[in-house]
Image 1 (cartoon, one colour):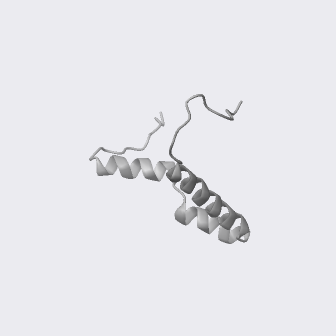
Image 2: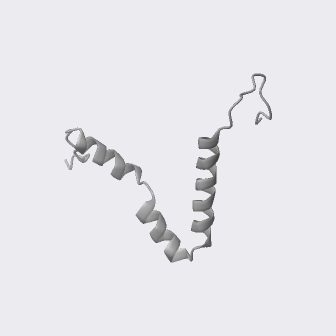
Image 3: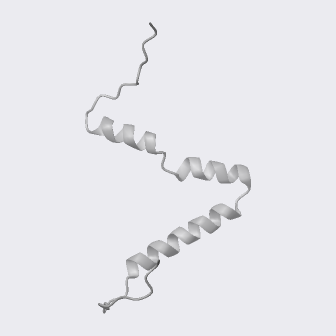
Length: 73
């Protein structure tokens, strides 16, 4: 269940949270408005591919990245 209110109200407006939600909504609407092929290119260009991010992070930390090899015999 999503909470509708809180027992300890805050006095400040969550400006950063609202800005983040608006930015994500605008990017989503832009992405949906693109033709199929352009949408795929948009995702490939600006989307984060977890494997690429993880390997890049490991390389920056100086860790060796080895591919898993299966025994042939």
